[in-house]
Amino acid sequence: MAQNTTKQITLGGGCFWCIEAAFEEAIGIESVVSGFSGGEVKNPAYREVISGKTNHAEVCNITYNPQIISLKNILEIFFLIHDPTTINRQGNDVGKHYRSIILYHYDEDLNLIKDELEKYNKMYFENKIVTEIQKLKAFFPAEEYHQQYYKNNNDQPYCKLVIEPKLQKAKSLLSRFYK
Image 1 (spheres, rainbow, N blue to C red):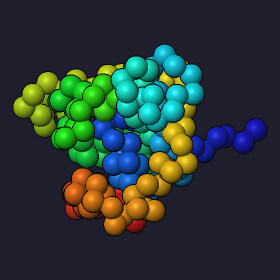
Image 2 (image 1 turned 90 degrees about the vertical axis):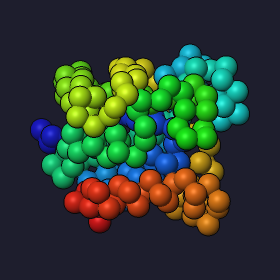
Image 3 (image 1 turned 180 degrees about the horizontal axis):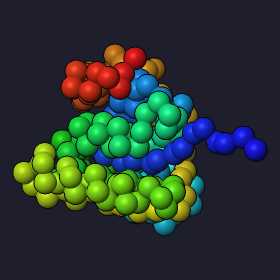
Protein backbone atom coordinates (compact mmCIF):
# COMPACT_ATOMS: atom_id res chain seq x y z
CA MET A 1 0.00 0.00 0.00
CA ALA A 2 1.44 3.38 -1.01
CA GLN A 3 2.05 5.85 1.78
CA ASN A 4 0.55 9.32 1.45
CA THR A 5 3.50 11.65 0.94
CA THR A 6 1.77 14.89 1.90
CA LYS A 7 0.39 16.35 5.10
CA GLN A 8 -1.72 19.40 5.88
CA ILE A 9 -1.82 22.21 8.41
CA THR A 10 -4.15 25.21 8.48
CA LEU A 11 -2.76 28.53 9.69
CA GLY A 12 -4.19 31.97 10.32
CA GLY A 13 -2.18 35.06 11.18
CA GLY A 14 -3.86 38.17 9.87
CA CYS A 15 -4.96 38.54 6.28
CA PHE A 16 -4.82 35.21 4.46
CA TRP A 17 -3.17 36.87 1.47
CA CYS A 18 0.00 37.35 3.57
CA ILE A 19 0.10 33.76 4.81
CA GLU A 20 -0.63 32.47 1.32
CA ALA A 21 2.18 34.50 -0.30
CA ALA A 22 4.77 33.41 2.25
CA PHE A 23 3.98 29.72 1.85
CA GLU A 24 3.32 29.56 -1.90
CA GLU A 25 7.00 30.24 -2.56
CA ALA A 26 8.41 27.92 0.11
CA ILE A 27 10.04 24.62 -0.86
CA GLY A 28 8.06 21.47 -0.19
CA ILE A 29 4.70 23.24 -0.27
CA GLU A 30 2.32 21.45 -2.63
CA SER A 31 -0.63 23.86 -2.36
CA VAL A 32 -1.97 26.79 -0.38
CA VAL A 33 -5.70 27.54 -0.33
CA SER A 34 -7.06 30.68 1.32
CA GLY A 35 -10.25 30.23 3.26
CA PHE A 36 -12.03 30.32 6.59
CA SER A 37 -12.10 28.12 9.68
CA GLY A 38 -12.60 28.18 13.42
CA GLY A 39 -16.17 29.48 13.38
CA GLU A 40 -19.73 28.22 13.42
CA VAL A 41 -21.19 29.13 10.01
CA LYS A 42 -20.94 26.61 7.16
CA ASN A 43 -19.66 27.86 3.79
CA PRO A 44 -19.36 31.52 4.79
CA ALA A 45 -18.74 34.24 2.25
CA TYR A 46 -15.89 36.70 2.76
CA ARG A 47 -18.31 39.53 3.58
CA GLU A 48 -19.90 37.42 6.33
CA VAL A 49 -16.52 36.59 7.85
CA ILE A 50 -15.25 40.18 7.92
CA SER A 51 -18.55 41.29 9.49
CA GLY A 52 -17.45 39.37 12.60
CA LYS A 53 -20.67 37.38 12.81
CA THR A 54 -19.28 33.94 11.88
CA ASN A 55 -16.39 33.66 14.38
CA HIS A 56 -14.22 32.31 11.53
CA ALA A 57 -10.60 33.32 11.01
CA GLU A 58 -8.98 34.00 7.66
CA VAL A 59 -6.69 30.99 7.23
CA CYS A 60 -4.67 29.08 4.67
CA ASN A 61 -4.89 25.34 4.27
CA ILE A 62 -1.33 24.25 3.46
CA THR A 63 -0.49 20.90 1.87
CA TYR A 64 3.18 20.03 2.22
CA ASN A 65 5.69 17.26 1.66
CA PRO A 66 7.18 16.44 5.09
CA GLN A 67 10.20 14.83 3.41
CA ILE A 68 11.14 18.28 2.06
CA ILE A 69 9.81 20.70 4.70
CA SER A 70 8.84 19.73 8.23
CA LEU A 71 5.98 21.00 10.34
CA LYS A 72 8.63 22.54 12.58
CA ASN A 73 9.98 24.49 9.57
CA ILE A 74 6.46 25.59 8.62
CA LEU A 75 5.87 26.89 12.13
CA GLU A 76 9.18 28.77 11.98
CA ILE A 77 7.97 30.60 8.87
CA PHE A 78 4.55 31.17 10.43
CA PHE A 79 5.91 32.75 13.62
CA LEU A 80 8.27 34.97 11.62
CA ILE A 81 5.69 36.43 9.23
CA HIS A 82 3.09 37.54 11.76
CA ASP A 83 2.91 38.80 15.33
CA PRO A 84 1.42 35.99 17.42
CA THR A 85 1.30 38.21 20.51
CA THR A 86 -1.49 40.54 19.37
CA ILE A 87 -5.09 39.57 19.96
CA ASN A 88 -7.33 39.81 16.90
CA ARG A 89 -5.05 42.04 14.85
CA GLN A 90 -2.06 42.17 12.55
CA GLY A 91 -0.85 45.70 11.93
CA ASN A 92 -3.79 47.76 10.67
CA ASP A 93 -5.92 44.64 10.08
CA VAL A 94 -8.20 44.43 13.13
CA GLY A 95 -10.94 41.93 13.99
CA LYS A 96 -11.38 38.41 15.33
CA HIS A 97 -11.09 37.06 11.78
CA TYR A 98 -7.43 38.22 11.81
CA ARG A 99 -6.50 36.24 14.94
CA SER A 100 -3.46 34.00 15.17
CA ILE A 101 -4.57 30.37 14.97
CA ILE A 102 -3.11 26.94 14.24
CA LEU A 103 -5.60 24.29 13.15
CA TYR A 104 -3.94 20.90 13.15
CA HIS A 105 -5.21 17.97 11.09
CA TYR A 106 -3.41 15.08 12.82
CA ASP A 107 -3.43 14.33 16.54
CA GLU A 108 0.24 13.37 16.40
CA ASP A 109 1.11 17.00 15.48
CA LEU A 110 -0.37 18.55 18.61
CA ASN A 111 2.58 17.99 20.96
CA LEU A 112 5.07 19.37 18.45
CA ILE A 113 2.88 22.45 17.91
CA LYS A 114 2.59 23.06 21.67
CA ASP A 115 6.35 22.55 22.16
CA GLU A 116 7.22 24.96 19.34
CA LEU A 117 4.78 27.57 20.61
CA GLU A 118 6.33 27.32 24.08
CA LYS A 119 9.85 27.55 22.62
CA TYR A 120 8.95 30.68 20.65
CA ASN A 121 7.21 32.12 23.70
CA LYS A 122 10.39 31.80 25.78
CA MET A 123 13.02 32.63 23.18
CA TYR A 124 11.69 35.14 20.70
CA PHE A 125 8.79 37.21 21.96
CA GLU A 126 8.68 39.79 24.72
CA ASN A 127 4.89 39.48 25.05
CA LYS A 128 2.99 36.22 25.53
CA ILE A 129 1.92 34.36 22.40
CA VAL A 130 -1.88 34.31 22.07
CA THR A 131 -2.09 31.92 19.11
CA GLU A 132 -5.08 29.58 19.39
CA ILE A 133 -4.46 25.87 18.79
CA GLN A 134 -7.44 23.78 17.67
CA LYS A 135 -8.12 20.55 15.85
CA LEU A 136 -9.46 21.41 12.39
CA LYS A 137 -13.20 20.76 12.23
CA ALA A 138 -13.95 22.29 8.84
CA PHE A 139 -12.23 24.41 6.22
CA PHE A 140 -14.14 26.53 3.73
CA PRO A 141 -12.22 27.85 0.70
CA ALA A 142 -12.57 31.57 0.08
CA GLU A 143 -13.93 32.94 -3.17
CA GLU A 144 -11.72 32.45 -6.23
CA TYR A 145 -10.53 36.06 -6.37
CA HIS A 146 -8.78 35.52 -3.00
CA GLN A 147 -6.73 32.57 -4.27
CA GLN A 148 -3.12 33.35 -5.23
CA TYR A 149 -3.93 36.97 -4.51
CA TYR A 150 -0.36 38.25 -4.27
CA LYS A 151 0.75 36.34 -7.34
CA ASN A 152 -2.12 37.80 -9.37
CA ASN A 153 -2.24 41.30 -7.85
CA ASN A 154 1.29 42.15 -6.70
CA ASP A 155 0.97 45.70 -8.03
CA GLN A 156 -1.87 46.51 -5.60
CA PRO A 157 -1.02 48.86 -2.68
CA TYR A 158 -1.82 46.24 0.01
CA CYS A 159 0.56 43.82 -1.67
CA LYS A 160 3.33 46.42 -1.92
CA LEU A 161 2.91 47.83 1.60
CA VAL A 162 1.96 44.77 3.66
CA ILE A 163 2.65 41.48 1.87
CA GLU A 164 5.99 42.27 0.19
CA PRO A 165 7.79 43.30 3.41
CA LYS A 166 6.67 40.07 5.13
CA LEU A 167 7.67 37.97 2.14
CA GLN A 168 11.07 39.66 1.87
CA LYS A 169 11.66 39.19 5.61
CA ALA A 170 10.90 35.49 5.34
CA LYS A 171 13.09 35.03 2.26
CA SER A 172 15.94 36.94 3.87
CA LEU A 173 15.92 35.33 7.32
CA LEU A 174 14.77 31.86 6.26
CA SER A 175 16.30 31.62 2.77
CA ARG A 176 16.87 27.87 3.18
CA PHE A 177 13.09 27.37 2.85
CA TYR A 178 12.70 29.30 -0.39
CA LYS A 179 13.28 28.48 -4.04
